[in-house]
Amino acid sequence: MKRLNPLKLHVTYLTGTTPEDLVVPRLYTLTHSDITGELFLSIGNQYDKKQISGLYTRLMRDEVLAELCDDENQLILKVYCHVSGGLVIGTARWRYNIFQHELPLVLEALRYGDRILFKRHPELDQTPVHIFFKSNNKRFNKIEHWGTIADYGPQ
Image (cartoon, rainbow, N blue to C red):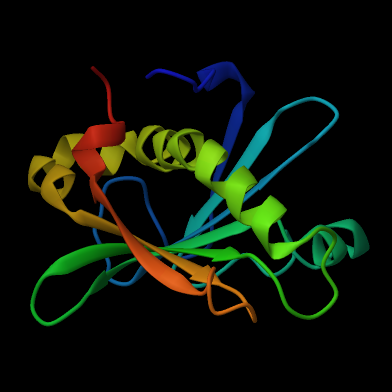
């Protein structure tokens, strides 16, 4: 891990989801505290709507949603970042640059937070990572390929 402080990561498994069993799709909701730097990761078969329903989170829209899913008979990790559109603070360029800077930490948090699953199913480390930047600005509304999950695991 290059950037993640495991002591600042808090993981919750939602009802019906276990650390060991792979059920697809597996959904991840990641939020953080700007004050403490703590990260809050929920893992389940749905997104943690309670975690992202607060006024601050709805205005900032800096949560990251991800899903480990089957895409044409291959597992893929799709990560969604809200760059612009709706009620959101900051320009698309500014938000895109922040996500670019913070995504390695986000991906480390997802991989480390679900490390029991990856230990039990080591083949999952070869899962491709695709980042979906959602924006009403065409320049920032795009998909980027960010290697495999293994790129964000323990070194």
